[in-house]
Image 1: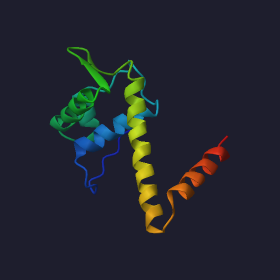
Image 2: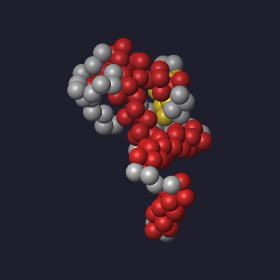
Image 3: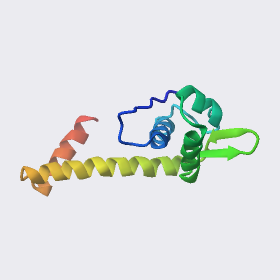
Image 4: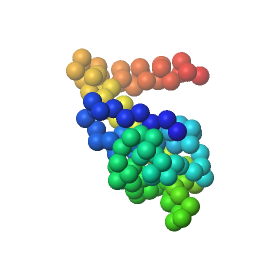
Length: 125
C-alpha cells in the first residue's frame, strides 16, 4: 500500500492517509477482505504518530470503507459496492459543478453544455 505524506499540504496528515486509502479502495487496488497494515506498522512506515494513523483508520471505519476485528486487525470492508458508487458519484458531481461554474463565466448556455457533454460521451463509445 503506497501512501505519500506531504508536509507542504494544507490537509492534516490523518486526512491525507484517509483519502489515499479510500482512493486505493475505490480504484480496486485494495479489495474487500484485504488486511491493512496495523496502526503501528503504518505509523512506523510513514514516520508519523500512531495516534494519527488510528484517527485515519477510525474515519475510514466510520465511513464504511474498512472494518476492524479486535485482535486480528483492520480489513477492507466487503459489500461496499453501493458505498463506492456513491463516493464516485459525489466526485463526478464535484467535477460537473466546476465545469458548470467555468461555463457560466464564459457565457455557455445549459443547452450548449449538455451538447458538449453528449458529444464527449459519444466519443468514448
